[in-house]
Length: 195
Image 1 (cartoon, rainbow, N blue to C red):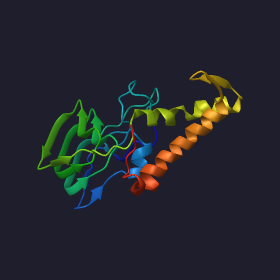
Image 2 (image 1 turned 135 degrees about the vertical axis):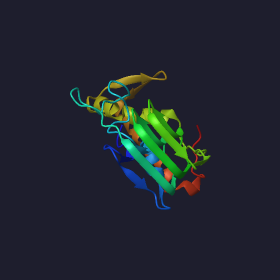
Image 3 (image 1 turned 60 degrees about the horizontal axis):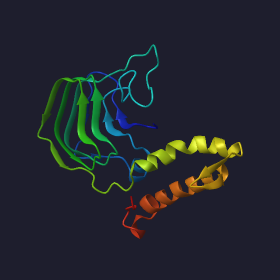
Image 4 (image 1 turned 45 degrees about the horizontal axis):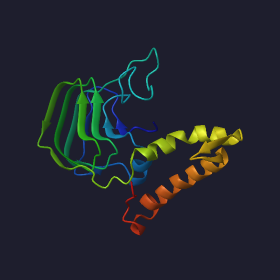
């Protein structure tokens, strides 16, 4: 999954003061890292045995934040998933924070024991998401396509025989084109891709 948060809180008794600053994911990182929380309140974004990847070993325990305060004024901005995410946390306070440009939720805290959210604003979620799920699928399939390319594999696509080398090269070119269109030169097409 890549790097899943800007800040992962893995300790008790932490206080984060935004001090009138903003923290957010860059547009380029948001394009390529589709599962991300600005603040993750644990050592793993998933509970043990859940999620597409295991961040916790068989003998390890997820370290979940407790007695945590996130205090504004300040802004938690662009995120391809959550502003704040956590599981199994205890005694969390979020005060005077403004949330903008998240794609899934401003705050998502599962199985929490003791939560205060006060004087916070959720102005808007992200409306200019430039890609759909096929982009993530294209990125995930790259290692497998590369392996087929290296083996000289041929396949039938849409009724035509195509080499894995051609399919892989086309895939990489398409991914690079998305980056070019969305991040490097968004002014050329208003930063939006056709679905």
